Length: 383
Ligand SMILES: Cc1ncc(COP(=O)(O)O)c(C=O)c1O
Image (cartoon, rainbow, N blue to C red; front, side, top):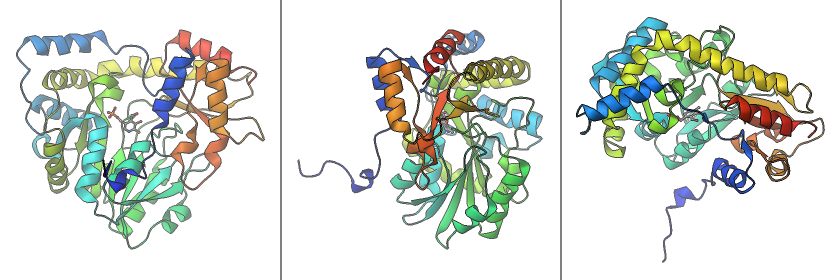
């Protein structure tokens, strides 16, 4: 056949997650690579799903999402952040945050537009830019602090810049950006009249009593920000793929224009169950946070004796570790770890375009059973 695929796919590399998961499977490795829990979410959410299945909630949902879920999203934004959103006009339920990201990029990017990403980045931002014909421009968050630098950000802006993508709490570094760092981004967005995607899927995975700052609360950001989050992360049910995008009506309309032709609507019973889940957030969150903080500490403390230097995450369920001094080949290390030690991790250099810093780091995920974490820690000693 003459044409195999569109040229825009040429720049999109196969995902490292598939490669590592395959190796993990072949070597029966302990998997600290895959970025999702290896245990189930709350049984009462599963009950809510089955209740919905049995009460005839099985036909297409409305295109923007089940009203009860959109109200629950608006409701928790009021309760937790004192933000007022209109469930009808401002909230769109999508197939995970992934679809929100895709639909938003398709809705606002024209070929040749530049999009500022902070590296290391979540890989779908980069791919989505390319699918939209846009040009990703990366600004490095330098290890081990991973702070946003005002000058480096300013120098990435050009007359073609259309959008900045912020992810906070940040995958893979575990950073929660401070109010000052977010203000740097907001100032640039105002000055150059840019749109901002704020990916806040880990908004509730925050440790040591740190408070999440929704980007939209910064001055002048409400009219230019699309906030994206995911019930998959909040309830540890990533397989249900129920996320949402929140924005003022003019922005929401554009996102929905794409969404209606990508998925049209997301599975109905899952939306009802997640609406119920979000209605219980206040009672649910302390236990959820305590669980993950304990797992973070288990992994962090367990690595104290190893040659890997763990960087304590402030949020998310990821932890970056520094390879021993002089080692600068994360892909080689990750491959050796999975084949020789039978423990799978992610080599983060794949999340960078400009900097080599990722070559001296590895990303571990601690959303794993205590048994898996202990086994992983043991296999990571003396490496
Ligand atoms: C930063 C970030 N954004 C978005 C997503 C995708 O979320 P979802 O599973 O809801 O599509 C992930 C999943 O790992 C993520 O880490």
